[in-house]
Image: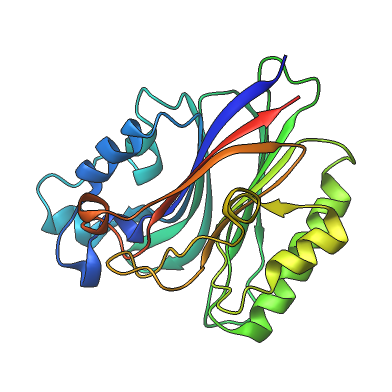
Length: 250
């Protein structure tokens, strides 16, 4: 009997709309809940920000990853990447399954752009082996992304056993769609939208998606469904579109 997982990936723009016009973290939480995803990969998650807490009366009293997880996702992991005077932000994974262990790796390619790779291992009922989930936010420059893709590949080779189910999701900033070939050829990973629709999803900008920046790569899964969420209600809350996928594991 196959195990069905629904996953989502979303760059939440630190809980603000385009150009930081509105604080939308409460609306964002409701949207995420409506996805009914067991595992959510988030990028640009605000772990702390003293200025926002002073400016907005309804700014969450807990870090964004805890606020978003609430009572829906019982476990979570947060990787602090960019640290500044007012606070910090990074990647997060929300899970309805127990996270057994997690680690955040610094994959910054230079001093002006802090990037991280968040690796969580979780126990999914019915799965014989632990599920490995990696949440990434790659750099803006191709030279840096090349270094980061190498570090991602090395992490998988060293820390993910052969044959273990694996999901990698996030904002790859990969304008030229080069990451997929490397992950497929070297590690046997496939992108869910390529499998379901023939090409990666257009996810940026959310108002009129043109670029294939956000991806979900899998190994050990079949893809039953893959969707881009970029309607009027979604483009109000981030400059990226959200991605969802329904996966089957034998």
